[in-house]
Image (cartoon, rainbow, N blue to C red; front, side, top):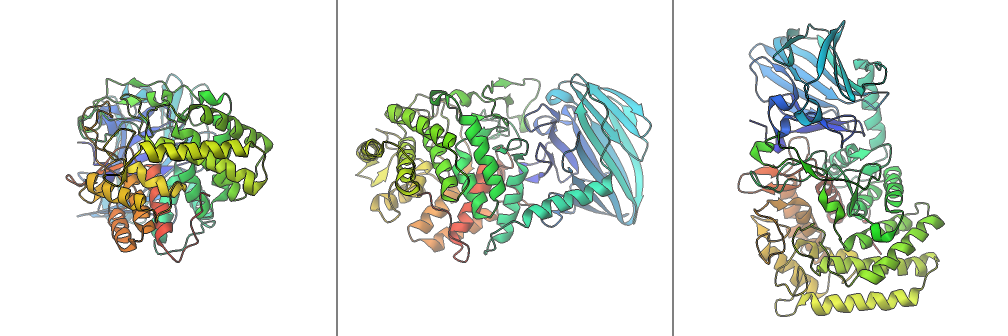
Amino acid sequence: MTSHIEDYALVGDLHTAALIGRDGSVDWLCLPRFDSPACFAALLGDRDAGRWRIAPAGAGAATRRRYADDTLILETEWDTPDGTVRLTDFMPPRGKGADLVRVVEGISGQVRMCVDLTLRFDYGHIVPWVRRVPDGLHAVAGPDAVWVTAPVPLRNEDLATTAEFTVSAGQRVPFVLTHRASHLPEPRPAEPDRALRETRRFWTDWMDGHGYHGRYADAVRRSLLLLKALTYAPTGGIVAAATTSLPEQLGGPRNWDYRFCWLRDATFTLQALLGAGHVAEAKAWREWLLRAVAGDPAELQIMYGLDGTRRLTEETLDWLPGYRGSSPVRIGNAAAGQFQLDVWGEVLDGLHLSRVHGLDATGAAWDVQRALLDYLEGHWQEPDNGLWEVRGPRRHFVHSKVMAWAGLDRMITAVERHGLDGPVDRWRATRSAVHADVCANGYDAGRNTFTQHYGSTEVDAALLLIPRTGFLPYGDSRVTGTVEAIMKDLDHDGFLLRYRPGRDGVDGLPGSEGAFLACTFWLVEALHGIGRTDEATTLFERLLRLRNDVGMLAEEYDPTGGHQLGNTPQAFSLVGLVNAARALDPGSPAAPSAS
């Protein structure tokens, strides 16, 4: 059976990433990019969908594992009756090809090791043509070619490659998998020892720029490393997660492809990176954002491909059964074509945050922002699909209207404080109109809470962001009432749901889902903001205990089953952790203001 989601660790090279289980199996790897077809897809199927396991003969889960210091070098160790062995996994900085290096090292005694390599391109669909070469094997299927170098004999059996060998104390046995387009010459494979040094140097040098040293420094540092690992270096885009179709409910249909870049994440991500001193990454993300949104504002999408690609056609892979039988497996994402009003505000908010922190602004960037606001002014009164990408009818979602207000507010601030030009009187009038509309139609005075959408009696965890945007201060009684209503109505064993999927007909999908971790981190910030810091701290530290042994968080958590749910590692969850930690810790620098 496939491992639990929290059993996986990640290694990556800022182009793609591999998920490796506690049992030493690489169950997910897309090459050459995050959004490429997987050559190891056992995560969504079984061994026949592709995997690469290295482990002691007859062994199950490892005794322990860890990342080496502030790096993405994974060290997995087994204590066996015959001795102790360590498996070191990493992906060095990208050269002409992508490399996955796996080094078996004897720590004590003599341990019999087994290798099981099953290559399956196109998400487990294509068995490659494999031939032996002097120091390993060469596999080809269409556009993909893989070379595996190994110092031990490899044998082919049942459309897989296996090996057995014994490792003694002090002995090192390295394996290198290298990928390149099949029409290009064979690249030189990584030299394991040199690649290990270079990989260690890359990550430790990057962490030298880290600027947070508060009470939760260890959790923040690991979260930032994982967030960095989700960055696509050639463009600066940050994928929402490294995986597709890990379910929000086991056996349910809420399985989505998250290997794309969401505009909504921009402000949260920029805040986390800038607050921790990682200005270069924040600048690269901002530049990706400006390129992605360029063009007709009416054609703005909620998400784009790693390089700004707009067409993200959704399809299902019916030959894969899905994670623990959770089907369908999807690639692409149809939500890219939805109208989500809040995205215009999110983009303007993110670019404003960049401006506040002194990232170089250009006239062209301001022209883009003016065009986006022109569109927002003309369309803020329309219903939309909301930030949760509901597949039911469009509604007047309160969060969407609040973000329209925020977009106007940031542009007004740019004129007032930064000397940029624009029809500020008209913008002020529209901002006031949006504010009045939300307070009149999106607030339930009887319950003293804002509602999910106009005419609804339900709440939505996104309402916790109202004071974060500056729409109302934390001290406003309507904010306190909304926080309390959300805690009452959306509680799931002390964590938060996004909303109640089965109510109000808003969702458009069957089934349920787990507690949404980013929303619960928002609750931490909201509780702190309304003066209930002890509760916020208790909740935050409970959330920290949901991370796995190497600091990874998926999108959701199932309190009943005690397991993580959804795609992993989830950038939204990691960013939520970083921002909540910085809000709580009085010894850290003040969190960047959105105003």
